[in-house]
Length: 114
Length: 116
Image (cartoon, rainbow over all chains, first blue to last red; front, side, top):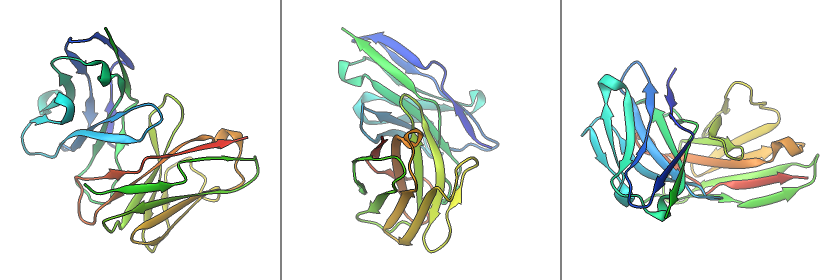
């Protein structure tokens, strides 16, 4: 069965600092991988996704993630944190079948201090 | 991009009553929709997969008689929480996938259920 593990339930950074949110997946074949952001009391917003094209994926709001098969990782990064980046971030995985759901990690809360 | 709506966005009900939540794909047909539940400060947990014209597939531990799912058309799936109890209070989120598209899933804005 597929699964994702997000290391660190809470990450704190200063404004302008590098953001690194970790995600490792477990799958017998390279899956589709996603990062979502959720602001308080809101739904999910897709940041970026990996679908077996380029391994370095650029998303919205300056975020990017790199798929590393050898490390089974898909870590999310942003060079310079902004106060508005404070939110909950979820890594998710799915296989290549059209009828399957996303499986989510437990989430990482990002706090940004001034 | 494609839009998925949920109604209501927030509902408060008394214990023992039933609540229906609607999930609609507004500009595409969705043969498959998914229902997730999210407790405070936790991740989204898949409850069931809803297939148009057939019975839903429930995840282990989810009571199918308590959480009734109906996917009567290609644009509408409903989740009915029957005989709701305070422990059913949660954030319910649906998602929909366009046919034959494994890469893309559109999420609804969620429904906040509070059972008193």
